[in-house]
Image (tube, rainbow, N blue to C red):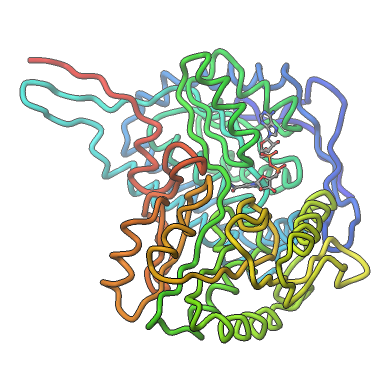
Length: 464
Ligand code: NAD
């Protein structure tokens, strides 16, 4: 077991202010694999001061030079790709193949997109007799979750750096080792001291200190709606910018005429990947009543191909497994029909949950309304398109979604009426440059691409 000490502040690893530590557990075998320091308000304060001191120099660095450093960051991450993927598997539990491609390869590509955007983005525009300057917001406090540990960091830190902001990162307590590797890569990339800082710690202490710090200009948070609401309230009280990427209960709408077998198979796989721990997972599958029984059969067959320990990893922690099992028990108690999986542990060791499918789910049930964050799909029956739309839009969330139809035009017409930030049309693939973020209580703001970069800018108009 490795005991790590130190926080990455002002361009070097330095001792934490206090001696408390966080244990990092491998969720596949429940063994403690490492300890990292639990940061305090004192560590956060030191990191924010370093970020503040570095801000004028980094903000004044020409975007083309910031692009060079971001390219170096992408290359430094690439040089560590094996180590990062193995670390994500060890602390999150996702299967190694998934850790390499989605968990590591994708965020490295995203880092590259922000290197390119830093060089090509127009940080100035003309409007009539005005020149509008797009300037960095300032010091960013980034608070990230564990489900895609590297991606969530890159999706905040890379655009912030591209914009000319400096950053203090407080990563999730379950996955601090990936964050430490990111800090090592930032160091290798020779970012100026203080431009990027890392403080590991628990949410209520280090996270709260960062979210409430008076010298942070923008708080960017991804995680639960409950914590996001508190962070939004604190930021609102201080009149500071906030970006929130929160939960979801995304609908996979299969319209009559769609390729039913494909829509169900892809829909089940989309939820089961990362063991359902994906904020835009299509956890509600909506099927027309005439095709419903066939869809249930297809879903059961598809779920059986996702074997725990093989294609499906464990959940991140015992606490998450407990929550997910509670949802499964509640689904059964409220009258939904369990057709695959269930609350029983599929393996003796590790925080595994069986891929679970519920049929006969009605829109008012808890499992049709609340985010479960586990490998659980609810199949809902609809009468006609209006009914499908009512069900699709009938939650507090609006993050992702999918529509399958006989042709793209039919699917697009339906997607236009959905209250959600992203919709995949007939299996359209993920686009790392498309804005990602929520309608309704799924959040405030957008990540990725030019829209993601714009979150970290503020405007100044000069009149001539
Ligand atoms: P969480 O919201 O508690 O944690 C996310 C991050 O916020 C972590 O870094 C955590 O340390 C920090 N945090 C916690 N309390 C804080 C506070 N008071 N002030 C500032 N920062 C704080 O999420 P969780 O407990 O890890 O997961 C719980 C649920 O959140 C999940 O079951 C899921 O529903 C949801 N979730 C959503 C996403 C997403 O991508 N939208 C990611 C992870 C979890």
